[in-house]
Image (cartoon, rainbow, N blue to C red; front, top):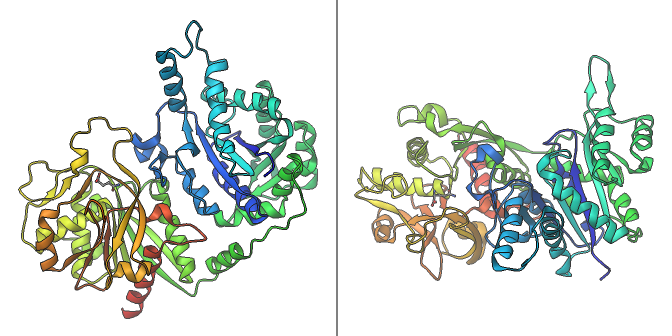
Length: 537
Ligand code: GLN
């Protein structure tokens, strides 16, 4: 294999321009030409990982197969590329400093002053090259979080400057900026882009390609103007117009030749043709649904759509697989009670109770589950959502009125959800949950088996608490069955109800594994059940 090429994606002018989607789209295009690609995110904050962050701060925490708690952009990388990411694909300033400080304490730098340059920048460069050194990838795309000009990003930009110098044409820089439309003037404005490139130049980095987020098409004139002011070729000014769906962006980027520009800049062969047939099939299904369903997502971060990103994207994939538009409505768990659950939920074709931590909203989740259980509405409970289904069943079917999870009530008489044995000795909060992929054995004659069509599956986890097996017999006798179990530790992974058309609780997170190429079977089957429920109304 030829030498790995390194592509950097840096953002300017404003945050939230979609560097993750541009990086993922570029990866998709390069992949569709037969190249192997991985994407990495460098985050300039001081937390060692986002695992301890509240979703209000940074949206969902995404979990990789190898158990890394990461930025939600890694979810996009996997959903687009269908290639699993790992711990090495997300690095924060906290982790960089932690490594350097540990080395200093060990005495690795004895006699020397430890400084941002070269020690911190060397560690950043080492982490970037680590993925290339695996020999598995033609391209490593590195997205740098934050915006050019932020104090926190400086060591990263400096590392990019050094790598450009060291690697020459094996490396290329894409700068994503905003070209705003001023309605009063009736014009698109290039000045913010010019200033952003100037800021980048002050740090010694000349971008090779400029991708311009815009709500209106860029004229040739405007592209030429940006090219002239920012020292790039006109063909390297790429328009990224607002799209109806993030999944259209690879097609838009192909039209703008982002992939050929990258291949040209890195001296890679241009003779391949992108094969995006499967992607286009998916887009066709997405935009030509034959039916639609309404699903309620009961959670506590309803104001923030990024908090449940992987779940909403899983519904997009599963919807397309069923040729169905899934309208997901966020419902605030704190607003639901036994008395109003009917009013709030009766018109939904399916209800999903979200993962989460802590007391807030728990009783509302339990009331929602009681209503869907008693009224045969398709239900999917994920992690805490599954645990709430267990608590609800204990309280209202087994008659253990004070049943609870030890997380919310450590004094409960009926701890139907208990702290896992391995968790009891753990003190620290960072990276200490049961994380990443574990096997699960699926029982035949279950909705889970009907969905997976196989017995042995592997799913990703992020939790400390678990179904208390002391109660399993009682639950099974009363109609709640464990239909998926961890083969080694006997932990309950999936619960289902005997007398309900579609009631599934999963201790793991199926949403982390759903991709465009492989929609998750549990979500696909859940949407199918919602369609059936709608028809039976
Ligand atoms: N708080 C629960 C636990 O730690 C559920 C976690 C989750 O929903 N991700 O077990």
